[in-house]
Amino acid sequence: MSLENALREQICMLAKSMFDRGLTGGSTGNISARTEDGGLLVSPTGTSFGRLDPARLSRFDATGTLISGDQPTKEMPLHSAFYDTRSTAGAVVHLHSCHSVALSMMPDVDQDNFLPPLTPYGLMKLGRVKLLPFFMPGDPEMGIAVRGLAGKRAAVMLANHGPVVAGKDIEAACNAVEELEDTARLAMMTRGLGARALSDNQVQSLVAKFDIEWDG
Image (cartoon, rainbow, N blue to C red; front, side):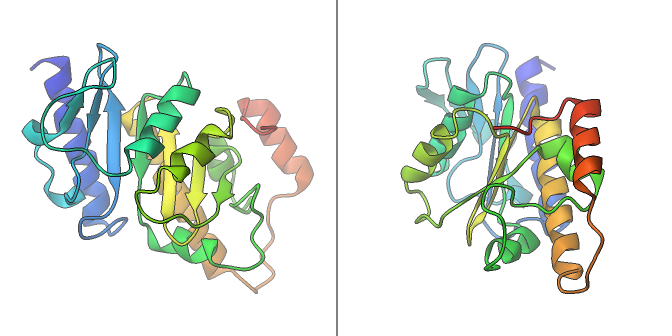
């Protein structure tokens, strides 16, 4: 099997795994990954994570031209913004995961540091997550907002919509977006209960030990 065909299969397998566990439903969410030649494989518009066809993924060449497959997701500006501003981005995943969306609706969340520091793993896999305002689905302004971060964030949360995460490869991006949803779930479960978050000293120790992107 060629590297590209293996990547196609991996994208569809990971997407189905997230769909089967209720991390995004119906025809929501989109996913993309860099190919060996600098192009992209992208989930087509209107498709379900549970039923992606490896042969029908949208295929872009290194110049950003669609060369085969179905028409891509309407959220391509989001994906392109991460690839263009983060040299380490090898994949991007966008979900409509319920707990992170619920947390984005809360009036007191920190827009510059969306996820509370409840466990080490959210910090280690995501760094600080930026909460972006609400945009209409498919609005190119979402991509412009990501570009405005100048590549300093690996993850953003679209208010009332869902998370978008970039990773070094497709597995890393999926692991990170799942960690985002898990942390948001913990935040909603413990909301108002006086849960003990990590202290500022503990956060800074983690940042230093694991070289976490934190100042952007």
